[in-house]
Every structure is written in C-alpha cells, then in structure tokens.
Image (cartoon, rainbow, N blue to C red; front, side, top):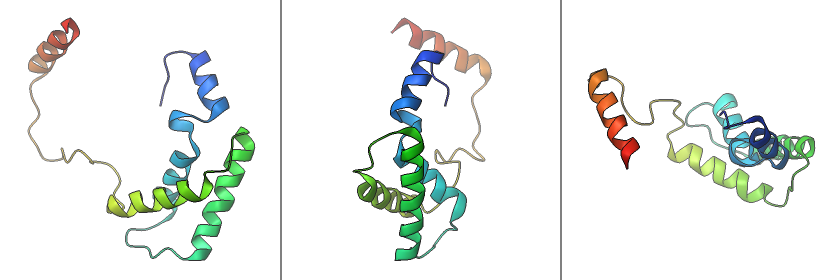
Length: 111
C-alpha cells in the first residue's frame, strides 16, 4: 500500500500501523504459508507467535496483543474460506464502459 508521501509512510512503518500492522503481517503470513482447510495446531500457533515477535522486534512495536491478533487472523482466514483475490466477486461480470466510470468519478468529486 502506498501512502500520500514519504513522511507518512515512514511514520506508519515506524509505528507499524495501517498496512504495516502486526495483524496484517500475520494474516499475510497465513495466506502465503497455509492451504485452505488447514487444521491449525498449537505448533502452527507457536510458529505464528515466533513470526509475530520477530516482526514486532524489527519494527520496535508492542507485542502485548500477539495472542489476540493471531487468533483474530486465524478466524478471519477461516471465515474468508482461505481465498485469495476476487473478494468482491467481480470475475466474469460485465464491467461498465470507461465513459460511465469517468462520469461517476467526476460527479463524486463534486460531492
């Protein structure tokens, strides 16, 4: 994710907020390393905790929410049916012409 300028990006990275949050890192870790329908064991959770601690240590952030973030990431991973992409379910749907999109965008800019 790109931020508006480098100073905002630096602050987000420094504090590990937004897309740099430890929760987002763990969720991305799950998406990369686990298959759909995986039955998570205590060993898996220990691996995630090690990843979480390493990520927080490198970023200098608070690790007090590790357990909650890991459980929340696993729950969201399972509730999302462990799927990548097309979360808007747009594949195979007809898209509007670019002229219509431009008209809507211009009208949205007027508020």
